[in-house]
Length: 455
Image 1: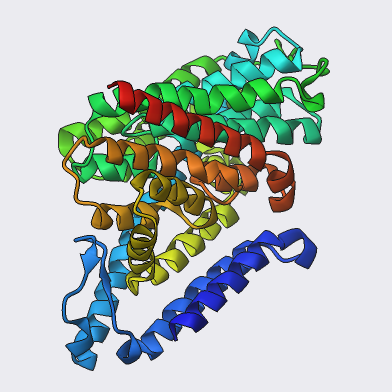
Image 2: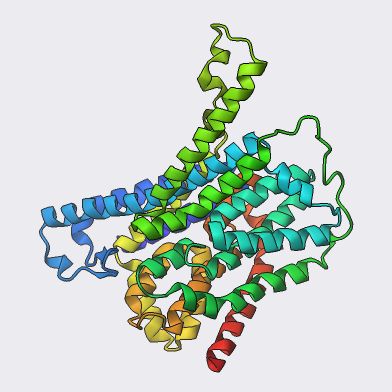
């Protein structure tokens, strides 16, 4: 039965990778794979010898001796657990995307555009790379990617050029998220799980992460797509510029930055703070919107003049890339199915016994995070290793899992969102960007090992 589950996962993964060849939206195989995997687990629950407790990060003792009712009850609890954890990420994502869309509704990103005075592609690449690196550490790599690709779409008209910029933004955002406890889901897991502290995480990973970003961008800056200038970097729209744009930009980004502060104070999951931030941004958006429409529109009984029609929150929600959100849901829940049977945990233990060198194991963890989601892999590593808090091993895990996902477009949340926003082809990314991400990953890993020897 385990073999059948793995085969189904591989088939589903291939269907996602061959999306454009099959002319089948990646959302469909992701959701189908997730549903089939959990259905087969439910049907064959009595035949499985192991079960993984995600909360305790270890295999359930004596699972094979459980009664059928006990196993089914455990299955339901596990499914709800993974649904809850996935929902936390999805609602955080929905909140961040809605705030970004509200900012865009008021043309807030034109504020950033006004600071970009160059048409030189190489200079633009470095500007976007450093913005991604810094923003991802503050507002997380996922949200930073959403913000920067939105800006990118405003200033670069050529689709092919934009794809190259988006690919390097993914690398830079994932590198920036690795050295911050709120920059990536995996670093947050290690932080909440008391494996790393903020100060040590920054101390150990700031330089490796910076090199992981700088080296690929440096190499790419000499490549043909980044030579020369782009046309119409700044479009003159002075007369139509929204007077509330800058206010909504700073309010929106400030509200996202407030989320980790809220989490630190309340110890509640990040999505709760994101919902509070969204509500605050929504209040100001509605106030500014009403003040404009009350002057410019004529009140009558037409449905198009109803408050709902003019609501910036409603408009922003309608523009969210829901297929990408559901695809993310399918992928996370499908990997959770394999995790629940202990396959990832047992595989990690087997890898550890075959390769006793933990550095190689952790680097392979990074490569694996590009193929499957890094969240369950980090969860498996938390159960596999027993090192104390702030052990350099945990920081290497944070770096490897955070940056390794850049090697495939679906290997990170930032990549998945960019894939949805720009319709990036899996194989295009694999041919053009993956090797740059791999170079950055290797250079950053070697830098970490060198710093570890010194420190």
